[in-house]
Length: 565
Image (cartoon, rainbow, N blue to C red; front, side, top):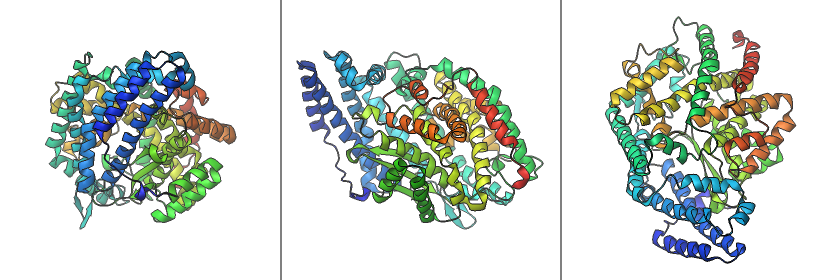
């Protein structure tokens, strides 16, 4: 079996690709039969697939070692060239929506392809290519700035991923000091973070106006391919989070304060759930992967085949190391029909989260790898997150293998973390609406806007020991705000869907799992709300949906005795 390190990387020949693309578009427009037109579309699509396969290989190798000069140069190449390939895709979509044999093409590929094409045409024009290149370059500057963090703490050197282990130390003084050490990196680079974001806001506003939008908000939604909901529906969803979730999350933080025996819960206590310490996996990364293999073998034949493929092909890079980009992600290399999972193990429960959450993404794209066109490998982002978050719950029965006697503690923390994330998630979304509706805000006004949202959605947060966080700078750590605008409400929408799978899995595992697999196999061939319906779930926008899910969660939480932890 071919391993990732042997995947061949070749810088795409943009001039040659463009010439071939032109030829296929001409064949498409001049086709005299459906078969001829369909073949020309497939050939043009394959060119795109090859380009983005090379881009994915480059992304993985660059983020594994941001100091690698070769792949840094290649990453810069893609920052420059992706807008040109978007221009080719724009032309393909223009001829697709007016295709002579459109009816037959819709019968072959489904209506979703044409929805994607129609919406994508509203996000691009050749006149914005230089702006897109600049946007890509500056987004990369943010990634590199964070990846280069060097945090000296108690005689050791950490990055933004590895320091998290110290931030959840049972020793309150240590976690407070570790948290402060991390934030001092942001203080030292605060002006640069503000400058990068100010540039991004202004570039995106300029792009939006060139495309005829009043500001970046509607363009941001179009870029996210949101075909069946709008900003008004999202605003109403945020209102429901504030009504139903914020009070519950506040109660959970109060339970946490009592468990920890504290007079006041400070911001550096938020992620430390238990006086006895947060649950941790009981082995090293190799031990964890071995147990993950056993778990996926027992869960289903589909997940067994998937995880075997991932391991045997070396399609995971999991351990934190110097120069590695922060965070975790899953990408897909179409040329090899291969997902890839990237992470930074740090000895915390986040390591298990990766092998459930990111593996959920990977299992989905592995399951839909044969759908035939790039537009269908992944669904839109909020649907993608259903696969990942739901996999976290489908694997609950195997948490004993990783956490041993702390498995129940992990499950309680998992539910608590998921609930408490929701207010933060919608705060990030509302912040982006505020910022892009007011592109001339100063950095100080942005900080003030963030701090007000924290007071509204996260009223428990106490920054009295941290003047820079009290000033409203917490958002600077959130990669999505810089690099993936408006990609965040997606997590909260998906979380409500995942809670439904959690409930259904407790009631009837076989039916819930079958619906989940069908959802994964469908890939991106349907819109978000159509996928939700396909999986037998209620729309998170539907009145009463949040209330019904929360009732079940409250009942489960009420049955947990905090004294047991």
